[in-house]
Image (tube, rainbow, N blue to C red; front, side, top):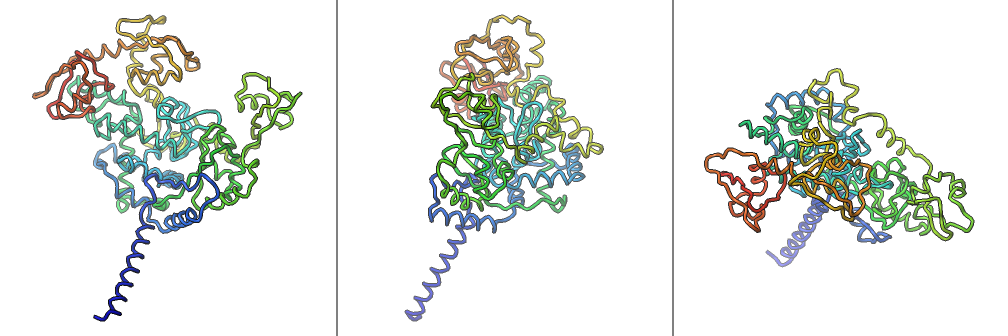
Length: 568
């Protein structure tokens, strides 16, 4: 072979390698988060513009997301189970519901799938928002749950979700997805990887599932999900998810038309670093306000929270236009309207001048009185309603329960065990009592004027405490604390307030005797022991010990006797 031929072959090999590398770059996912963050400081650099162009190209040439999801399913779907078959039949008879839910899911599906994969969770959990809210981020329930994951305020706060007049992170798809999946990670660990129990607990709370396990253990009955004495809603909830997964996993057997969703980031997140008017942002991005609010449902008014978060979610195709338009805009026009109070101004005069109300001015500026100081700056609230505001109000008011609403037009042929009376069997709203359902029984036995009992705890409220945090810390329910301390949810807990924590109830429960299985070991907890150390010593796991001993938490005390199961 001549030198010329060798040189030509080398050039060809280099060219082929470059083409392969370019192809691999486009095919590989850009990051594990599922949403791109392109900028914080404006304008976009040439490098970032190229990255954005690559992402847009990747999006338009991506596979169908539904094919990817079905290939990643990992749970058994129990298609032969009559309860699952019943739910499959309902879905197949109401394919319009599936199509509408899938349409709503389209902008968020890739992000949620990536977040699920990042946590090594079953891909089936991507479908949970279909059952919770039909993937509607504006969904509210009369119990107080909100967003696609239908999180209650207390649970959301416990997972770091911000909620105030400006912003409700439960409706923010990015923030609420992280919180909901973190909660599911916890539930998966709590039930030692038994995902049917974990999914059931997402519906009704781990305390209710643990109580059902306790009952079956005492009665010598199997403690698998199918045998547990749980509310009808929960008995339907798990088969419903399995049915939905079975339909998606077997398109030939269950022909359902799902709108295609590209398996690549559709959304970008931009950190503005300051407050911005959403109407102005929509104009700069080339979107309607309705479209912008649909992607940013966490913002409850027509501006972002002045104290953050400042992040806006946009389609990746609108990022460059938004960036370039924002760069050309004067800095003093990039935020919401502020007014500097002049000498002689009154709050009434300012309200009239800007066609708003005194109540709105006080609320948006967190004023405790009508007194305003000359020289101070106040935010002027937006007063113009928008299609997005009207849509939001519609979802907030039109129905009493979000899941009931989606099936209202087909109620005549819904099976009696499916969807017809959602939530009505639950003793408490979702997440209101995630640790222990014994509240329902114990509350009836609480004296009207409860006094400190032997084994109870006297707790002094600290800075940053609220009733939900305190209840979670002591593994009880907020309702129990309300009843025992004769307070309501509107009661403000002042620092230094003393609360009675009725911990003797929990202690009484742990005195129950359990029959040992052959080969089990009894271990007495020693000084310095933790559940992690004990689990490691006996080659088992903390969740296995919790389930074996019917414990509601990881707390162990010196002198406690623990069952160490033979099988670990």
